[in-house]
Image (cartoon, rainbow, N blue to C red; front, side):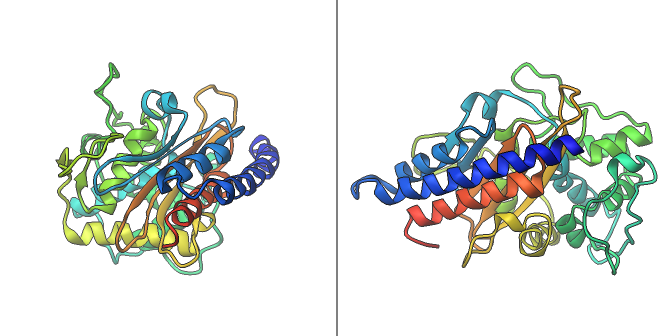
Length: 326
């Protein structure tokens, strides 16, 4: 973990500098440059030197608004970390394995996975509901959820959200039934691995309460949903509540935008190169009540809370600035 903290220090300084440069670029671009071109220019400037990837789209149509590191976005696969708690939570609710108002106390260290997955959120004085467990990214809570479902049910949940592989030559996801392996999968660790594009589509589907649009770069009228994820309205509501609370008071506070209700989820996952580092995710959308932009940020080194979420927040602020405000 020391590696992650040291790397975070250096990278955060670089990202802050890139955010200032992006703001200057946005200010000095000619007045006749379109809002989308201004947004793309600012995203490119912010992402330079981060070693990461970012993509933003319109969740109502799937049209890409800005992109950095296209090959990584569409072709590279990584464990999604806690962004995958979207799936574990949805599976538990839809299969009546937990009620949205049922509360569980966090015991900090998941009994199946031990200290390596100790919760990093602040000490909880009250038990968590599913929404507040999402907001605080409680590993203990979601490991407990994994014990209530079988591997086949969890696998179907990932496939339902388009995160089960099976395309582009990749083998379809297979989650072992062994409890520890199932718990790791419930937290978005291997064997679960996704492309940033797939994760963006999954969170766009939450924004649109089920409608999932394929990503593209041309205006298409009328836009047609690629498919629909059918969940109960109460499940969508609980997920959305958790993601909005995550930005308001949980692990995603760095992604906040003044005057805009942002919803999202951080993720920190083990790097695949066995280096001991972690890579960082943020996935979300805004405004929460009427989404017009969805975003995924991936950084090769760092944590979701300290690295990916603040960078996503700067990108979202640039999006609304390019449009003239929320």
